[in-house]
Image (cartoon, rainbow, N blue to C red; front, side, top):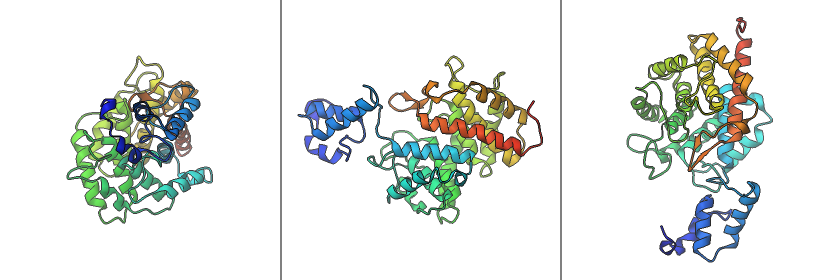
Length: 330
């Protein structure tokens, strides 16, 4: 679209309370250039430029995304209630901004099924009820949309919807929604691993699928569990990018999360594989800021708080797991 094609009459409807055009610095800058500019648009851009030392992220702010994804990964490894009162303010904020459409990655952006499904799961886990019927807003004929008009299905969205529905056991439509999500996942879990459009590593989506489907549809994830075990490297790590420095640190954390979940539920994972993975992760992880960007948006990025929650909770989970066993780490 060129400057001359911009619908000036639509701008007020697109502008968020923070002055942005849908939380997009690039769209906001485009509108500022194409028009005579605005106080609110310029203020939004100036705040970002000052905060990020002259550069800006693809989208901002994204405060709900950080809260939801960090708490979700913590909850996969640790009982969230054990982290109270540290997590209470975040949970209260999520509850307060919940709408009839759920939530998005920010209070100044439209809701989506990804943030909504995980937000629903977190609120349930913390004893706060929200109506799972909100997921119907994202339901289409044979799958769930992340947002209207999306061009390709997100497998991670369906994994997260499974997580949410597993928590909502009294929801009348739980079973038929679960079946719809499982049917989509079943189409793609015929291969050893899966990839999605939000993260470059198949270890991310594959590990999350294993955790989500465990004890719900074990036959769908048997091949993926075997793939995780057979692709462990000699140093104990996992990575799809052996020539990308330090990518293995984040990837190894995801695999350990999945293998520890399977070990706890089924006990048929060699504990030595988990031990080796833990030794690698504990030895080489130093700072999340030094890790490569593996998450996908307009560019690759590294959401520090989320990745830190993944790694630290995985290390803590291993220590807790080992306390429950009589085996000694070799």
